[in-house]
Length: 233
Image (cartoon, rainbow, N blue to C red; front, top):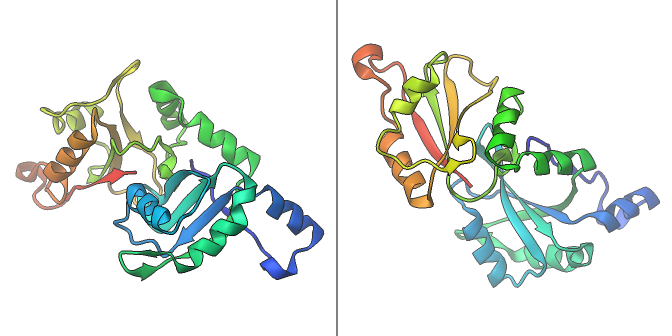
């Protein structure tokens, strides 16, 4: 979901009528100062210890498929908001205090999130439009721990050459074939970024171990291109 999270502008004790209406519709909480290595499973475990209720989804918020030290909680109903915010006041992750605040997603953001999760074809269509940028909760792709982002490769590398790096790995065989797509990014035009959907979480981790911090074709490019690889949760 490329959508950006819109924060409430007013404090809880100074709610105007419009603000109160917004508050009454809110079903999301943003966690801040989340360690970059934290996974959704880590957060769910901490939420269980803090006895939060009514949490239907936990998503790491990314920018360009890189963690932003924020996460988004989705509640099944607005009635859980106040009690969960209270419970979050003492939440810690790996011993570090976490901040939280209610946030509101627009209807267009919600629709965009749904469109991005229509399987292989939906993601491929989004990539064609330049819509997959790796921004927002889950980086805009389904959260299953099987997605790997690889960047630092030559900017004009052909997909067939990139595919050679994946020889021996099991990719997800979906209705439109293996999910391999170029990620459109404006942050660094000197390198390219790719998203791969693996068959399993173990294969995703194996691919990261194989590619991360390795030089791409060192016999041809020397040390010019250093690949980075990470799991997208």
